[in-house]
Amino acid sequence: MELIHNLATGFGVAFTFTNLLYCLVGCILGTLIGVLPGIGPVATIAMLLPATYALPPVSALIMLAGIYYGAQYGGSTTAILVNLPGESSSVVTCIDGYQMARQGRAGPALAAAGLGSFFAGCVGTLILAA
Image (spheres, rainbow, N blue to C red):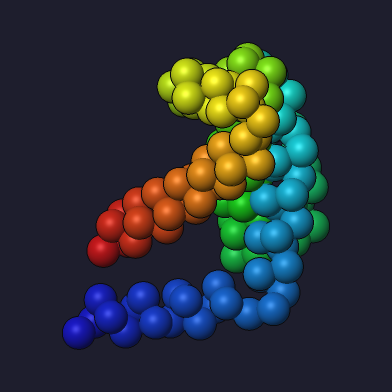
């Protein structure tokens, strides 16, 4: 029961408006930088780390997590649209995603990559937390 109580306390802190706003800003910034080919999530965090210096510690960690997940998804955008993987994790996305984009279905390919990234990130985080 202590695990459930601790998870509820953590979600109570994470689901405040301020922290969700920092997560959204981090995801947007991470996606914008992660779209650049050759710049993966680690380099994106390294470049945007000074943006979190003035934030409270919890908000800074939440924003860094948003930057990481945004940059991880951003690499699939170039893999789908240009057939140029930004990092090694989006190499497989080039195979099906680029072919879908050539057939005029780039929107569904990007949506599938985004939903897959969101679902896998949520499930992985919950398993890691448990």
